[in-house]
Length: 389
Figure (cartoon, rainbow, N blue to C red):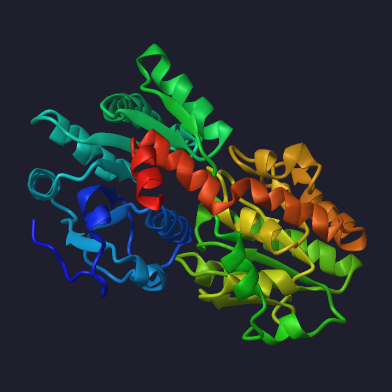
C-alpha cells in the first residue's frame, strides 16, 4: 500500500509507537465524518496516533483535525482483492496497535485478512440496526445477507454498537457466537458545537425571529424520509405559520423540491444543501425534527440537544428513543405518520421544554468520556493514560 500525503505536522514518538488504524468511510460530508473527527481528536489528546485508510476522494471533515496529524493511506475501491492486498501490506509494514472499521465492506476486508494470518486487535463499529437493514433486503437475499454479516462480525475481537438497539440487533444476529459486544454512544465535542453555534453566518430565515423555524439535517435519501416531514410541515403550516429548512444534499433533492412545489410551500420550505456549520442553524431554530425510517444513533438529533433545540423524532429503530429518554425530552411518533408528526411539531412549538434540560441530556455523549471507552475496547487505554502522565 502506498501512503498518501500525511496531514501537515509530525506525530509525536509516543503516537508513532502505538497507533490506531481507522477505515470505513465514504468521500464527501456526513455525520460519520464528524463522529470520527471527534474520535481522532480525543485519541490525539490521549496520546494515541491515528492512521486513516481511505479510498480516493474528498473528505472535507478531515480539515479540522490537521493538528492531530493523522497519516493517510490509500485503500482501493471497487476491487476487493486489491483492497485486501493493500490492507494486508499496511498491517504487516506499519503494525498498528488496533484497527477500527466503520463499514461492512472494510469489516469484510479485515475478515479476509484474518484468514491469512495474525492481526492486531480488530474491532467493528456498527452504526445501523441490522434488523432493519436485513428487512430492507430483497426477500431472496436476506438469508445470504445475514450469513455474510455473521461471518464478518464473528471474526472480530469485539463489536461496538452506537446504541442499545444496535447492540440488541447484533446479539439477535450472532447469538452465542458473538464476540464481546459494547454499546458506546457517538463521541461528540460539545465545546466545539457551542463555539460554532455562536456564528452568525446563517441562512436569512435564522435571523427572522417572528416566524417559528423548523429544521432538519441529513443526507437527502429515502432512509431519512424527508417527504413525510414535508407533508407534516404542510399540515403544521395550516395551523401555525412557520418555515422549514432541511440541510443536506443527496439523490432525492429533485423529488423533494417537486413535493415542496406541489404542496405550495415554495416560500416557506427550502433545501439550502450541505452547510459546513449546521450548529449555528440548529441553535437558532425553534424545533429540530428527525423523520427517519431507521437509524443507528442519529448524530443530528444529539447535536440538536447540544444546541439546546427542542426536538421531535420518529420512534424508529434505533437511537431516538434512547436519545430522547423514552420521549421525556421530546415526542416520539410512528414512522411515516405525517399527521402524528405534525401534531407533535405543533405541540412542541407551542410548549417547548426547558433549554437547560436538553443541554444536560447532551452531556451523555461528551467526547472524552466516550473516546476513553473506545480506547479501552481497542486495548489502547493504558497507552493513552501513560502518555498523558
